[in-house]
Length: 157
View 1 (cartoon, rainbow, N blue to C red):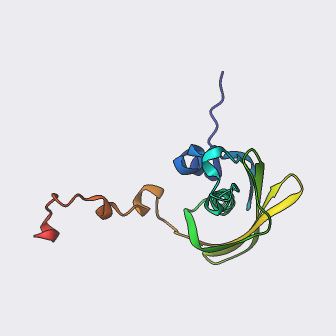
View 2: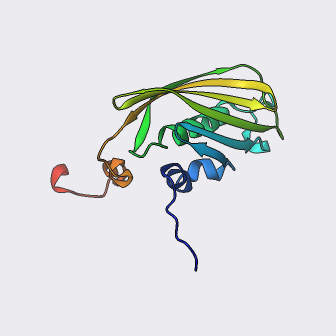
């Protein structure tokens, strides 16, 4: 008999994250307030200087942050984030982002993420989170932005 197990909030959120999976990010480990993810820098990720584009490094760190801060259950989003690029990454490099909760207070939290190539730190990321209590994930999307100009609604008449 196969036992049915329910996925964790982190696993459920990551399974629906097409942006991160589309660039090959993998969820390695996760726990309460923590996560580790991996990404290999591919040719499409390098900029004109032949180093990894900072946006991809940020994406990896931001995804680790999202996995860590959503581990507690309620839908949690970024209230803000910043990154410091410490060293370049290159095509073929395997980067690992490790996120750790620093503190949670009320509906907010602060998380640190280190992005490394082996033992070498590539970037340090700081994320600030905000939980959206009582809001299911599908209701956080603003569908009004997806209307085409030819769509007529009562509000636009």
